[in-house]
Length: 110
Image 1 (tube, rainbow, N blue to C red):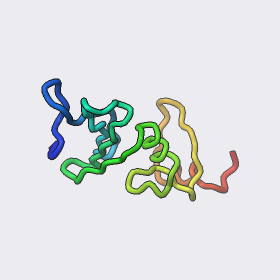
Image 2 (spheres, rainbow, N blue to C red):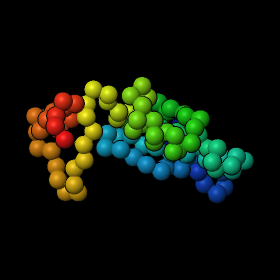
Image 3 (spheres, rainbow, N blue to C red):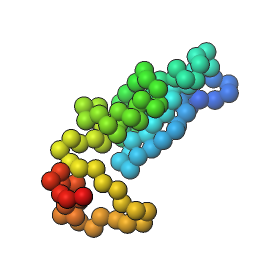
Image 4 (cartoon, one colour):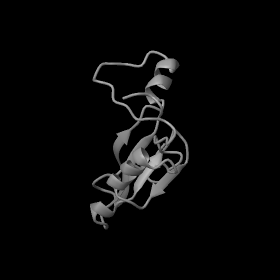
């Protein structure tokens, strides 16, 4: 599952440290290497269980920013220029595709 990197351990020089996951089986890691400063560790991403690895030579902050704001950051982006952003209070859910379309309609009133 972690091939070719393996999980980071105190007895290893490098390996993966998980820092995040998403709702569609994406898993996010740092490719830790004790010979490199932690702020320079690349972000390693596996989109689904067993899928190929993607390495990004950027900070975690930049990676998250691009996921949220860059519609060109495929296949990891959640940004969509054609839809309007919205906020749901904690505990509130969307019950239908029609409700989603209404909330994200770029022409809707505030």
